[in-house]
Each structure stands twice: as C-alpha cells, then as structure tokens.
Image (cartoon, rainbow, N blue to C red; front, side):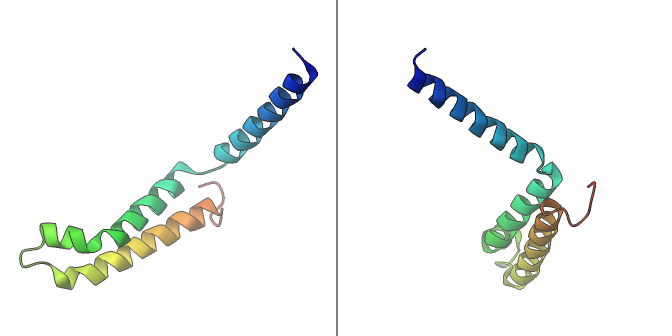
Length: 85
C-alpha cells in the first residue's frame, strides 16, 4: 500500500468512526416521533381529504397541531432534554 492510499484509508476510517459515534447516540423513538410529526403536519390536507366525509377541512388544523407537537417532542428527545429516554 502506498503512502497516499494509507492516509486516505485512515482518514476514511476516522470519518466512519465519527459518524458511527454520532449515529449511536441518536434516539430511535426521537427520530420516529420527529418523522411522524413532520409527515403528519405536511400531509394533513391529503389525509383529511382521504379519510374525511366531506373533505375534512375542519380536521386539518388539529392534525397540523398534533404533527407539530409530535415533531417538537421528537426533537426534544433527540436534543436529550429528557435524559435516558
């Protein structure tokens, strides 16, 4: 192995170990709540149209608020506001 290849390989391994450390500290429930909340907030009009009887315009705002609350809870879990969760 030449010197240039050796430095590239060790630098790549250092990057992999860094990202492995970052990803190992993330909370799966926090990521899940954040994604579900974001999707619920973004897709509220489509969900209301699909499941509502007459278009479901009245249910859009409560679904968006619920999505916002879920996303905020997920972000707070990811930022470790609640330790050991």
